[in-house]
Length: 313
Length: 288
Image (cartoon, rainbow over all chains, first blue to last red; front, side, top):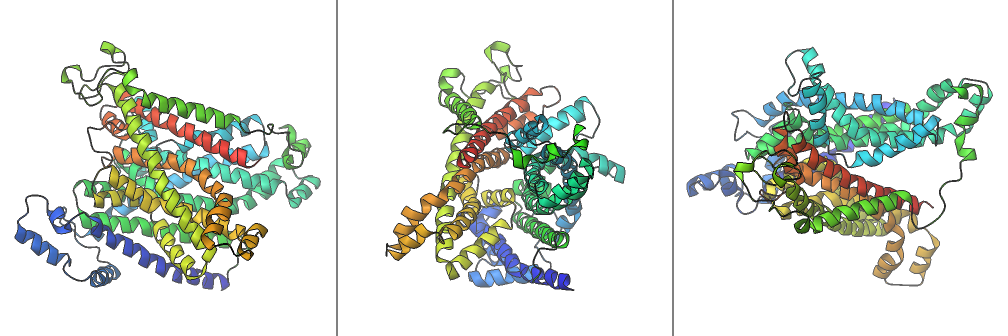
């Protein structure tokens, strides 16, 4: 019950954030230098067409009224219409969103597969050879451009070895899964350094606490102490770190989708930018922010569920 | 696994090994600084290191392999010398990367200082704006802003400033909240010094270290953002050489000309490594 109230409160606290997001997205169109209508239509536009678009975009209204209209449309799920495709922005987003979510899930799974064993190994044998190597990895990984890493993976595992598709996402479930391996690994390789660092630190913290000493003193095997007792507690704080970074990496999906030609919302955003399709860019920017908000919400809720010390009040 | 019989190896925190000696310098910091200095030197001395113009096309000499016809790293699809594009690209990317960190650093730190010190409605307003901005993935908002403002370095600077200041603001604000309860801050306040003096002369030197440490990794992130913009075709407009654009151009020919994308990518990785080492070294130094 208390938990439900916590979730509800957390949901209510999202309202100002969502309003803020809509405000920023609304203001994007104001940043276009000069007259947005003229810029949107390009250099061949007639003055009449420009005037018409100004009225259509509501640019003749006062600013507050424009924002309220925009917000009103948003609340009805209306993100506007694409200038390039003959469909609504919402439809474009709904078609491509599943691909991006697949990619995020795949990236998270591979991150856990890479980061958890390495962090545990490093923490259990602190200052050993493995630990020193594992600690050096984040330093190299920090400056690794995700898109370049993706190209290199394509080169080695796609083109030279032929293990995975070079691009695209296929039509069947098994194609989807195969197509998601390299992009997922790309995301994982850029995300796991940060996670390894934090998980290792909290493992070391936990391993030096009294209850671990007690567990050792009781004669429980080391592997059980490390994996059973320590990891569970160390994982709690790393959930937050993972959450924050998934939110950050939501941005990288955009680039990874581009490299692997995955038809997700990131790819859609770049195509719309190159096609100067303003409503679609606005809609997708909004969608990305909503995804971050959802990931943050899930992180907090998971954290609260895992850690009884989190105050639910 | 020898550890299964003893509790020793898994209880390291208590014993601890004697770590590196105290001192102003440490291995990561020196290695990072040397590497970074070399990269900057290469960029500055570009005209001495190569005789080719980075934007001079020569379609007869397109797609030369590294080493052919006096082109050490070969030529690209338009016959431009890859080495000189790499060196001149370093000038562009490093300049934008370093400069684009300065204004978010200054603006964010000042707002964090104000926000943490005064609290109340000022803190609430700044806090809400921070919440709004961090709700967006960094790259997505930067891309959307650059798109809206049009291509060019000014747009890139502005976009990165508009998005990047929040990190500094949060870091400094957190530090101020701790620092303002400490004796020196209270003493400064009690002695009736003007507020700006307390903030800039007493508080700032004590809270800015975390922001400086972050700015080192932030340069890496900013460099990555700029290269990524170039890769997506939204960066520094052509024909100006830029590593991201070079990687993107190389991707089309990846099958038989693998080095076209690999070489500029390695340049990014090397630069990132240098900066990450410097950041690591500063942290290590600060923790002593």
